[in-house]
Length: 521
Picture 1 (cartoon, rainbow, N blue to C red):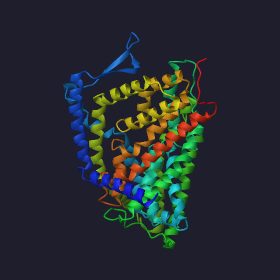
Picture 2 (cartoon, one colour; picture 1 turned 120 degrees about the horizontal axis):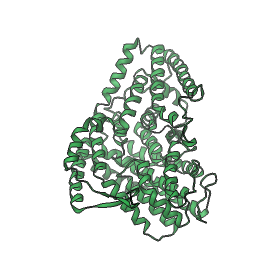
Picture 3 (cartoon, rainbow, N blue to C red; picture 1 turned 180 degrees about the vertical axis):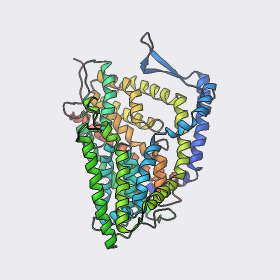
Picture 4 (spheres, rainbow, N blue to C red; picture 1 turned 180 degrees about the horizontal axis):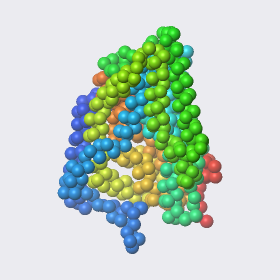
């Protein structure tokens, strides 16, 4: 990047940061969004805005018509007031965050994280830190939502221990976990979930079509190796340079990280040894639960692709126990934990740090709920998919439009499975009729779905990432986070589109037995 283009990029990102930081507190942004959704829902309901649902059918076989609902109707007002506690407590990320952070609070405050990361980074090459964090972030998607609440804050600690800007580490991990949401070296729970939806959509056109959970295996491996240098480049040449002038301070963690050149004391080394034994014990227990008698973490009665779901879903609890056990073992051996009262105090302090996030989650949960109750997201997605269905374009151009469309819709409807459940019944048969396989349409959807995760405040974990950043830099605002993540989003989207087009042009297999082309004959 030459000086002129670098200055231009810095100017644009600086403007985004300044403009974003002038916005109200994120809690009130969600409040204003709620008021806006209420007003739009009233207007949409009066205009009779509707869409034919592609999945739900009436008794006569015709599509069920989805109408926009006014959020000021008696039913919705009653629903809001009666369901308010459940709306908050059922907010998807809330339970994951609280459970994992209980354990992480002990590991953090006992000094385990600081000592472990300082010891690990003392001899590690700084230039390999970014790709390592990004790769672990992408592979961490096998742990589903646990990756957000475990890997991302740890990346900040790792970068700080290595003498680099902690928010750059958080950004790299966030880009890997969320921007590279579908990239991986192994098929996982997401593959089973998406291909289950793909199969239902494909069977409307060809009832004999069966899904293969590894149908995107080669494609997601290629995504991993394409996205990794992109995240590395953006972090080291754009993001960290912008953050260089921001000295971490005012947060709750900046003073706790050891200088990476400082030697560990005898107590710290003894504590790390004890934590290692504790970690090994937890891993052995989890392996036993997966392969031992009765296999509690394997559902042998489920379909083959869903048998590992209990194991993946148990990883949130697993990380809680892992952090609690290692933090306690470290603290007991190193002297930072005297008795169980210290452990309870550390867990309480961890919950106190999440006080602002709880307020933010309350506002975000109600915005997401009201947006869903209005049916505006459904109608927007269905009508947009219908527009794509009416276009007659070359395969590469059509897939590019689908990727961009999915990336845009992702700004408003965050759930990957919910969006695909709405789009697949139209997109999959449409592309099958043009000679594109269901596996290819699923791959294209995955590219678009991940790219904009990292720039939309409507993504459930976006407010949490802001809290992670503010633990290092108190003044780090919503505009700062958006400006930091925008270069990742743009380049991940561009590289994903180029990968998809190249795959179609070259006709490469997407996975075992999965081709780009499809024929109804």
